[in-house]
Length: 329
Ligand code: AHG
Ligand code: MN
Ligand code: MN
Figure 1: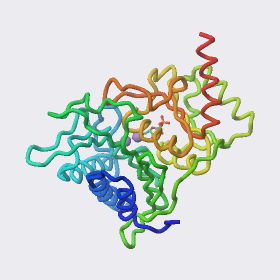
Figure 2: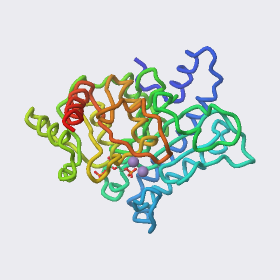
Figure 3: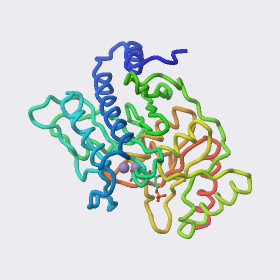
Figure 4: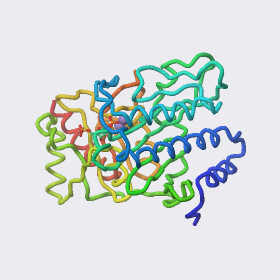
C-alpha cells in the first residue's frame, strides 16, 4: 500500500512505468495541483472575505456567474498558460477557446475544465468542486475549437477536486482511479484512496425530483422502480459531490434530457466526459440512456448531454427503461 504518498511522488512513479514518457504530462499535472491548492484556499476562506455573491452578469450558459467561479477560472488559466505543456484551454466560464499568449511556449496537450462546479452551493457551505479533462492536440498550427471536439474515450486524463470537509483530488489516466487528500499543514495531496473500485450496484439514487413534471415516461418509471426497490434519495446539487459520494458508496446519478432540456443540462466536455472516464475506470458506467457517454462525438464546445452515471448494474438497469421508452415511441 502506498497510502500517505505525496501525489507529486506518485505521479513520478507512474511516469516511470511508461518507458517513453517525456515528463510533459507530469509537469502539466503538477501545474494543475498548484491551481487546485490556490482555489482550495480561496474556497475555504470564501465565508470570511467579500468574494461571495454574484458578479452581476451571466455566463455563456445563461446562468449567473458568482465571483468564486471567476476566481477559479482565472486561477487555472493563469497557472496553466505559461507552463509550456498546453496549446490551449476551454472552460465552462469562457465562450470560445482560450489561447496561449504568443510569448509563452506551447505543448501537446489541451485542458478542458469546469472551474467551479456546484456554484449554487458556494455560499451555503456545501461541497463544490473543479472538474478537468486533458486531451492531446492532434494537429499542428493554431488551436481551434475543432481540436477540442474529441470523443471522451480519447481523454488522456480526467479528474476532479472536491472542496468538502477536506479537499480531495480524484483522477485517472486510464490505469485505475486514485484519490488524494490535501493535508493543509504541509500543502500536499497525500494518497488516501488507491485504486478506487465502485460497488457493482448501489442503494442510492440522485436526481433533481423538482423536475418530475418535465420527465419523459422512461425516467418516471425508472425512479418509481428504484423507490419500489428501497433506494434512498441523495441530491445536493453539486455534481462533483453527488458523484463522489456515489463513487465511494455505490449508486446512480441522473440528469436526463427532459421536456424542458431536450439535450440535458450538464456539459459534455467539462462535466460528463471527465466523470464518465473516471466511473468506467472504477468499474461503473455512464451513458445518455441510449449511448455510452465516452462514444459521443461532440459538435460544439458547450454541448450539453443527458447523463446517467454510476454503478454498472444500476446504469444498465436504467438503460432498459430508456430502451423501452424508445420502443414505445
Ligand atoms: P455549475 O455550478 O458548474 O454550473 O454546475 C451545476 C450543475 C451540477 O453541479 C449539478 O449537478 C446541477 O447543475 C444541479 O442542477 P439543478 O439545480 O438543476 O438540479
Ligand atoms: Mn458544473
Ligand atoms: Mn461551473
